Length: 196
Image 1: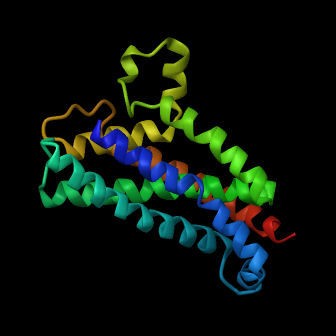
Image 2: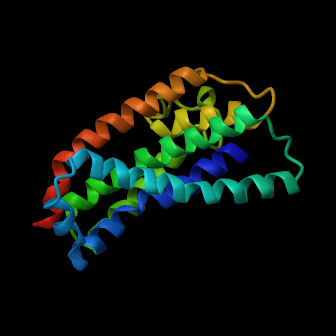
Image 3: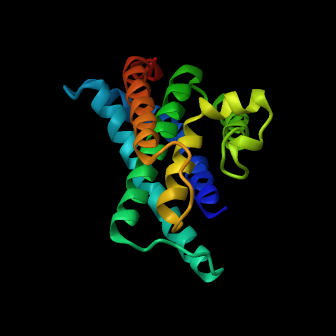
């Protein structure tokens, strides 16, 4: 459960990151960013990385709580570095999705409603709580296209010694990188819309 709870806590931080973009628009910061020569994709990726860094504080808290509860954790430096990279990728994916939604809906109220609607289906249609193998067929399909499934799979393999890795860490990371790339490219196209 520890990797799933870690992924959930980072997801909840990241999915509401778009509200900060709406605040930036209201304060006039987005207009200043958009007139700079910085490529739009770099602006979006920078916001995604900052959300990932914020998510790392959750990792420290979850690690400490898991250790206090007696969970066997893999403390190898390579595994810890892998956890950091996977968390950064996962938080970046979901914060970029959040930014895209914020650019489309443009108001805090609408964004909060959509954010609430997205978080639970993303969480429950993943392997964060229970294995994909015991899910009904329709939910299994949803889990296979859910990036959170791959994030949790990688976290489980890296955090817990001897834990099974269903997809392989390489595939998990590839799916997260591909998802992030697609979302950053889409985010770069819609980001200027938030200023209008």
